[in-house]
Length: 394
Figure 1 (spheres, rainbow, N blue to C red):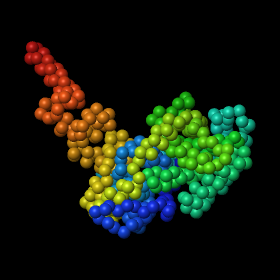
Figure 2: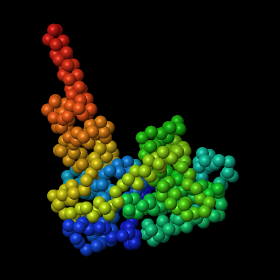
Figure 3: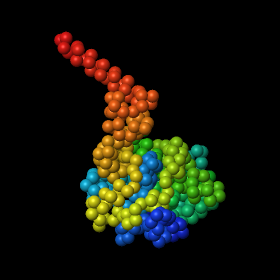
Figure 4: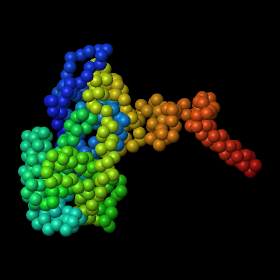
């Protein structure tokens, strides 16, 4: 259930483009991202949860750059005075690891039993499966070793269980390394993602929001696996994921099949819309850095130099959400009220502008949005007048 820290981008990625008005020596993307997070700072993990959240808000260049550079957003938020408790509690982390170890005990016998019950599709009972060794140096080495193990298992035509394989996926021009809980290779060449969660499945049903989050996370793994399957003869990535959870209120594992085709399509489309990290970095003022040794003022200026796309949904997915919300509220931006409200208001981008348009002080009466606001304001005034009149009669 743990995710592996993102490794540095490969050296063959082209150098960033310097602005024409302020030329500076060409640097590789690896060097530029190291400058942004601080030359002596190791890159922060970029996992499937982060990618799913990033794909859900592709217009946020701020998150794309910070995640691509491996900046510690939680530490950055704390330095800016907007820190908040975020992420999985230590108790939940320990409980989850213990449950995962139970599911994978004895060579994954219980896991394979659950998978055969839900996704056997008429194949012979797996009995025992090979568990290849995936150890290698660094995330790039582990990703290469995983790809080799997947090819070998597919060619062998037997059951294989890959415990915490390493997968690579390019995101906004920068590679991210992902570690699913497990991947099972079927005799027919199908690869199935296994996601193990510690939230309970009561009467064969689990919390819909948590299942949805697990499905989005698994869709990222499916996309990464498809890159390997594309160059592996006879391989096919299954779009049905095995979700393993504790049964009812016990610690016994049970499983459910989750179809992630919709989540995969949405994630693929959203990731394709992300602005490439090198393009965002090239537009920053020279000397911009998010190094932890900078003052809060310097860090605040650096953060504000990168455009953000705040929405209330960010509060559940991004460590910088409280900072971005405070700035959006200070500007009176309608984005702080939600994407739905923002979409309905068209060219009106501030709360003050919306109120002025509703009061008839600003805006073109021919604009349908302005006309709707004024009609709503008139109806509200009429309703309030009616209430006041009724109170006066009593």
